[in-house]
Image 1 (spheres, rainbow, N blue to C red):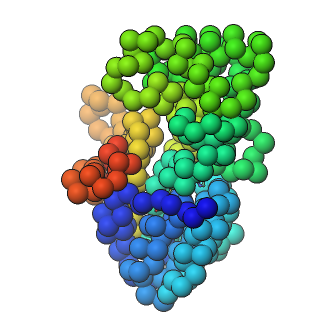
Image 2: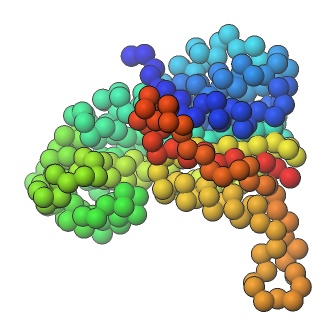
Length: 311
Ligand SMILES: C[S@@+](CC[C@H](N)C(=O)[O-])C[C@H]1O[C@@H](n2cnc3c(N)ncnc32)[C@H](O)[C@@H]1O
């Protein structure tokens, strides 16, 4: 199956990221190398790209796509939660830019057997890294009712989280829930009919997002990864973060804000005692996709691009 993914806010991201054409850029979410190949076009042969992805299919597609790149390219099959070790192994102490284009690729969503989509029947899986043992099957069949309700509420902002969790637990008392189709049926039975028909998308959308976030620990690793990236930026280097839902965007916003703050003394102190210094400055306001891109690519609708520059 061909790797299909339309990169979001491609020009805005690369323009905001690349400050030195001979610099080193780390793409922490390589995917189909859409952003990386555009970065490569703006680099000279002295430039370097390190591309990281935890998904073997993305690594294969990106390796092919970057084969003709005119700069040096190093591709790493790993999770960016290990960014510190990856940089050490690549011999990089300071880079000119880091990009995070968060979430799943269209290829992952469209490959039915990966089990990411509520639109296609497949085994419950949702692992970005297919070498991991832990999958959506384990979450749905082994988590306690309270835990299921918590992740649906926290990671899916699902209003019917308790009711859906109760319906899942009841269903699995008869037999394990094995497929995305079975899970969608359970969710549809749990959500009242009137609500199911109202706006807000498919009734399974939020629960699938929540399970995907849990399986891949998508939120838990962000803060540390952003901090490691900033710690390894050269002065004047940039970090670009593309988010696609409010939960990951909240973390990006908070971490960048904290790192851009000077004094963090409690209000009311006559003089600063913390001596905290800002590490970055924020470049402009968070950007959203232009009208033309919104019409062309529905994935761009929820996208926010935040850029910070190392001081
Ligand atoms: C939205 S896609 C990136 C698309 C890419 N920027 C492009 O333009 O082709 C996100 C990619 O990041 C990968 N990914 C998500 N979280 C990751 C993590 N913690 N470590 C490594 N890769 C991750 C996914 O496997 C997926 O391939």
